[in-house]
Image 1 (cartoon, rainbow, N blue to C red):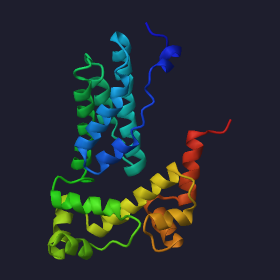
Image 2 (image 1 turned 60 degrees about the vertical axis):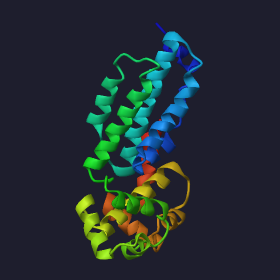
Image 3 (image 1 turned 180 degrees about the vertical axis):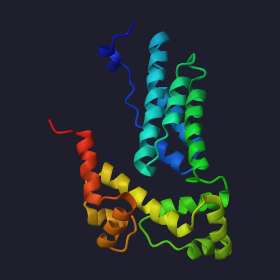
Image 4 (image 1 turned 120 degrees about the vertical axis):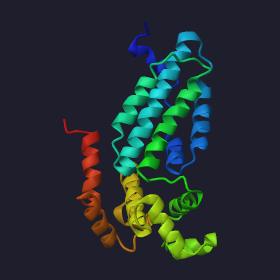
Length: 232
Protein backbone atom coordinates (compact mmCIF):
# COMPACT_ATOMS: atom_id res chain seq x y z
CA UNK A 1 0.00 0.00 0.00
CA UNK A 2 1.36 3.41 -0.96
CA UNK A 3 2.48 5.49 2.01
CA UNK A 4 0.84 8.91 2.31
CA UNK A 5 4.28 10.43 2.70
CA UNK A 6 5.11 9.28 -0.83
CA UNK A 7 2.16 10.98 -2.51
CA UNK A 8 4.28 13.97 -3.50
CA UNK A 9 5.78 11.87 -6.27
CA UNK A 10 2.48 12.18 -8.14
CA UNK A 11 2.01 15.26 -10.26
CA UNK A 12 -1.42 16.11 -8.84
CA UNK A 13 -0.96 19.86 -8.30
CA UNK A 14 -3.39 20.68 -11.09
CA UNK A 15 -4.85 24.18 -11.22
CA UNK A 16 -8.54 24.00 -12.15
CA UNK A 17 -9.34 27.72 -11.94
CA UNK A 18 -9.87 28.14 -15.69
CA UNK A 19 -11.91 24.94 -15.78
CA UNK A 20 -14.19 26.26 -13.02
CA UNK A 21 -14.59 29.56 -14.86
CA UNK A 22 -15.58 27.66 -18.01
CA UNK A 23 -18.32 25.82 -16.09
CA UNK A 24 -19.65 29.10 -14.69
CA UNK A 25 -19.75 30.48 -18.24
CA UNK A 26 -21.73 27.46 -19.44
CA UNK A 27 -18.80 26.13 -21.49
CA UNK A 28 -18.92 22.48 -20.44
CA UNK A 29 -16.98 21.13 -23.42
CA UNK A 30 -14.13 23.56 -22.76
CA UNK A 31 -14.08 22.46 -19.11
CA UNK A 32 -13.90 18.79 -20.11
CA UNK A 33 -11.16 19.50 -22.65
CA UNK A 34 -9.25 21.37 -19.93
CA UNK A 35 -9.30 18.28 -17.70
CA UNK A 36 -8.14 16.06 -20.55
CA UNK A 37 -5.25 18.42 -21.21
CA UNK A 38 -4.22 18.55 -17.55
CA UNK A 39 -4.64 14.82 -16.92
CA UNK A 40 -2.38 14.07 -19.88
CA UNK A 41 0.48 15.12 -17.60
CA UNK A 42 -0.10 11.95 -15.59
CA UNK A 43 0.34 9.51 -18.46
CA UNK A 44 4.00 8.99 -17.68
CA UNK A 45 3.00 6.81 -14.73
CA UNK A 46 2.20 3.12 -15.00
CA UNK A 47 -0.11 0.59 -13.40
CA UNK A 48 -1.38 1.34 -9.91
CA UNK A 49 0.64 4.57 -9.83
CA UNK A 50 -1.36 5.93 -12.76
CA UNK A 51 -4.73 4.86 -11.28
CA UNK A 52 -3.92 6.44 -7.93
CA UNK A 53 -2.76 9.62 -9.63
CA UNK A 54 -5.99 9.74 -11.66
CA UNK A 55 -8.07 9.21 -8.52
CA UNK A 56 -6.26 12.05 -6.78
CA UNK A 57 -6.70 14.28 -9.84
CA UNK A 58 -10.45 13.58 -9.87
CA UNK A 59 -10.67 14.27 -6.17
CA UNK A 60 -8.87 17.57 -6.76
CA UNK A 61 -11.29 18.35 -9.61
CA UNK A 62 -14.37 17.59 -7.49
CA UNK A 63 -13.34 19.74 -4.54
CA UNK A 64 -11.95 22.54 -6.72
CA UNK A 65 -15.35 22.98 -8.37
CA UNK A 66 -17.19 22.58 -5.05
CA UNK A 67 -15.19 25.32 -3.30
CA UNK A 68 -15.14 27.59 -6.34
CA UNK A 69 -18.96 27.55 -6.43
CA UNK A 70 -19.12 27.91 -2.65
CA UNK A 71 -17.01 31.07 -2.66
CA UNK A 72 -18.45 32.46 -5.91
CA UNK A 73 -22.17 31.82 -5.45
CA UNK A 74 -22.51 30.85 -1.77
CA UNK A 75 -23.68 27.41 -2.91
CA UNK A 76 -23.14 24.42 -0.65
CA UNK A 77 -23.55 21.59 -3.16
CA UNK A 78 -22.69 18.96 -0.57
CA UNK A 79 -24.88 16.21 -2.04
CA UNK A 80 -23.37 16.73 -5.47
CA UNK A 81 -19.85 16.65 -4.05
CA UNK A 82 -20.60 13.47 -2.07
CA UNK A 83 -22.14 11.74 -5.10
CA UNK A 84 -19.05 12.57 -7.15
CA UNK A 85 -16.84 11.15 -4.41
CA UNK A 86 -18.74 7.86 -4.70
CA UNK A 87 -18.29 7.90 -8.48
CA UNK A 88 -14.53 8.07 -8.00
CA UNK A 89 -14.60 4.79 -6.10
CA UNK A 90 -15.79 2.90 -9.16
CA UNK A 91 -13.20 0.99 -11.16
CA UNK A 92 -10.93 3.57 -12.79
CA UNK A 93 -8.99 2.89 -15.96
CA UNK A 94 -7.01 5.15 -18.29
CA UNK A 95 -9.89 4.64 -20.74
CA UNK A 96 -12.73 5.83 -18.50
CA UNK A 97 -11.11 8.52 -16.33
CA UNK A 98 -12.04 11.34 -18.71
CA UNK A 99 -15.65 10.12 -18.77
CA UNK A 100 -15.74 10.17 -14.97
CA UNK A 101 -14.35 13.72 -15.01
CA UNK A 102 -17.01 14.70 -17.56
CA UNK A 103 -19.73 13.30 -15.27
CA UNK A 104 -18.36 15.33 -12.34
CA UNK A 105 -18.26 18.51 -14.41
CA UNK A 106 -21.76 17.97 -15.82
CA UNK A 107 -23.21 17.24 -12.37
CA UNK A 108 -22.18 20.69 -11.13
CA UNK A 109 -23.28 22.29 -14.39
CA UNK A 110 -26.73 20.69 -13.96
CA UNK A 111 -26.96 22.13 -10.47
CA UNK A 112 -26.22 25.61 -11.83
CA UNK A 113 -28.95 25.14 -14.44
CA UNK A 114 -31.46 23.85 -11.87
CA UNK A 115 -30.76 26.82 -9.60
CA UNK A 116 -31.06 29.18 -12.60
CA UNK A 117 -27.55 30.54 -12.24
CA UNK A 118 -26.96 29.45 -15.83
CA UNK A 119 -29.42 29.02 -18.69
CA UNK A 120 -29.81 26.53 -21.53
CA UNK A 121 -31.42 29.22 -23.63
CA UNK A 122 -28.68 30.40 -26.04
CA UNK A 123 -30.03 33.97 -26.04
CA UNK A 124 -29.91 34.22 -22.25
CA UNK A 125 -26.55 32.46 -22.11
CA UNK A 126 -25.21 35.13 -24.46
CA UNK A 127 -26.52 37.79 -22.07
CA UNK A 128 -24.81 36.06 -19.13
CA UNK A 129 -21.54 35.90 -21.04
CA UNK A 130 -21.84 39.59 -21.92
CA UNK A 131 -22.29 40.43 -18.24
CA UNK A 132 -19.24 38.35 -17.35
CA UNK A 133 -17.08 40.00 -19.99
CA UNK A 134 -18.20 43.58 -19.16
CA UNK A 135 -18.64 43.33 -15.39
CA UNK A 136 -16.50 46.43 -14.76
CA UNK A 137 -18.67 48.60 -17.03
CA UNK A 138 -22.16 50.14 -16.78
CA UNK A 139 -24.54 47.50 -18.18
CA UNK A 140 -28.08 48.17 -19.41
CA UNK A 141 -30.34 45.50 -20.85
CA UNK A 142 -31.51 47.89 -23.59
CA UNK A 143 -27.91 48.16 -24.84
CA UNK A 144 -27.50 44.38 -24.81
CA UNK A 145 -30.80 44.00 -26.67
CA UNK A 146 -29.65 46.48 -29.29
CA UNK A 147 -26.38 44.61 -29.71
CA UNK A 148 -28.30 41.31 -30.12
CA UNK A 149 -30.90 42.92 -32.43
CA UNK A 150 -33.86 41.96 -30.22
CA UNK A 151 -36.58 43.96 -28.47
CA UNK A 152 -35.47 45.05 -24.99
CA UNK A 153 -38.90 44.34 -23.42
CA UNK A 154 -38.88 40.85 -24.90
CA UNK A 155 -35.33 40.23 -23.68
CA UNK A 156 -36.19 41.48 -20.20
CA UNK A 157 -39.22 39.18 -19.98
CA UNK A 158 -37.28 36.23 -21.40
CA UNK A 159 -34.49 36.79 -18.90
CA UNK A 160 -36.87 36.79 -15.93
CA UNK A 161 -38.67 33.71 -17.24
CA UNK A 162 -35.40 31.81 -17.77
CA UNK A 163 -33.48 32.97 -14.67
CA UNK A 164 -36.28 33.40 -12.16
CA UNK A 165 -35.29 36.98 -11.35
CA UNK A 166 -35.07 40.33 -13.06
CA UNK A 167 -32.05 41.38 -15.09
CA UNK A 168 -31.15 44.15 -12.62
CA UNK A 169 -31.35 41.77 -9.65
CA UNK A 170 -29.12 39.20 -11.35
CA UNK A 171 -26.63 41.87 -12.40
CA UNK A 172 -26.36 43.21 -8.86
CA UNK A 173 -25.83 39.71 -7.44
CA UNK A 174 -23.24 38.88 -10.07
CA UNK A 175 -21.28 42.04 -9.33
CA UNK A 176 -21.20 40.96 -5.68
CA UNK A 177 -20.12 37.43 -6.65
CA UNK A 178 -17.28 38.90 -8.70
CA UNK A 179 -16.31 41.15 -5.79
CA UNK A 180 -16.12 38.14 -3.47
CA UNK A 181 -13.68 36.42 -5.81
CA UNK A 182 -11.43 39.50 -5.89
CA UNK A 183 -11.64 39.89 -2.09
CA UNK A 184 -10.67 36.26 -1.57
CA UNK A 185 -8.12 35.78 -4.33
CA UNK A 186 -6.35 39.15 -4.61
CA UNK A 187 -4.88 41.86 -2.42
CA UNK A 188 -6.59 44.66 -4.34
CA UNK A 189 -7.95 47.47 -2.16
CA UNK A 190 -11.70 48.05 -1.77
CA UNK A 191 -11.74 51.08 -4.11
CA UNK A 192 -10.08 49.09 -6.89
CA UNK A 193 -12.43 46.14 -6.40
CA UNK A 194 -15.43 48.45 -6.46
CA UNK A 195 -14.28 49.85 -9.80
CA UNK A 196 -13.47 46.40 -11.23
CA UNK A 197 -16.98 45.18 -10.41
CA UNK A 198 -18.74 48.11 -12.02
CA UNK A 199 -20.03 49.95 -8.96
CA UNK A 200 -20.45 53.71 -9.27
CA UNK A 201 -18.50 54.42 -6.07
CA UNK A 202 -16.75 52.56 -3.21
CA UNK A 203 -19.39 53.75 -0.73
CA UNK A 204 -22.22 52.40 -2.90
CA UNK A 205 -20.30 49.13 -3.33
CA UNK A 206 -19.89 48.82 0.44
CA UNK A 207 -23.59 49.50 1.00
CA UNK A 208 -24.75 46.92 -1.56
CA UNK A 209 -22.21 44.34 -0.41
CA UNK A 210 -23.24 44.76 3.24
CA UNK A 211 -26.93 44.50 2.38
CA UNK A 212 -26.35 41.31 0.37
CA UNK A 213 -23.91 39.53 2.69
CA UNK A 214 -24.53 41.01 6.13
CA UNK A 215 -20.96 42.27 6.43
CA UNK A 216 -18.73 44.90 4.89
CA UNK A 217 -16.22 43.95 2.15
CA UNK A 218 -13.35 44.44 4.60
CA UNK A 219 -14.93 42.23 7.23
CA UNK A 220 -15.75 39.58 4.63
CA UNK A 221 -12.09 39.43 3.59
CA UNK A 222 -10.86 39.43 7.20
CA UNK A 223 -13.22 36.63 8.23
CA UNK A 224 -12.04 34.49 5.33
CA UNK A 225 -8.39 35.11 6.22
CA UNK A 226 -9.10 34.06 9.81
CA UNK A 227 -10.89 30.90 8.72
CA UNK A 228 -7.93 29.95 6.49
CA UNK A 229 -5.30 31.01 9.05
CA UNK A 230 -6.77 30.62 12.54
CA UNK A 231 -4.84 32.30 15.34
CA UNK A 232 -2.31 30.09 17.12
